Image (cartoon, rainbow, N blue to C red; front, side, top):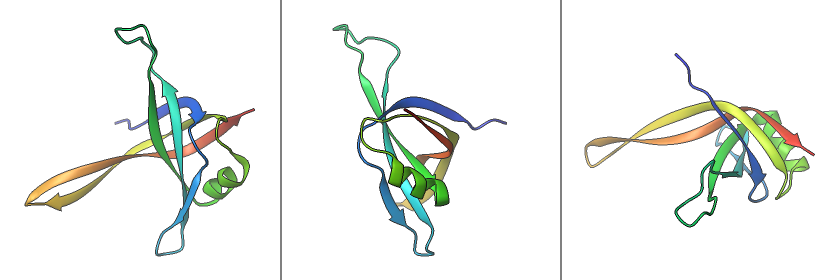
Length: 103
């Protein structure tokens, strides 16, 4: 089995630090990635992908990265189930295990 994502793009904003109730820090990075094809008007649209980074790497990136920096991120996709109206739904998130800043 394989569960891997790999993206490269520009930070669309400053990293946002959050802390869990247990005291673990994490950062959310919004990475803007250009699509590899043009739309019907010849424009290459961009997707904004929110990436989670945990613990020490989160703090390092939050203190060193800024909007517009080029980054690469590699990690896994996490599915978090929740129930609503008797149905099970999933929220998916991209959890980075490695992030490199390209300067």
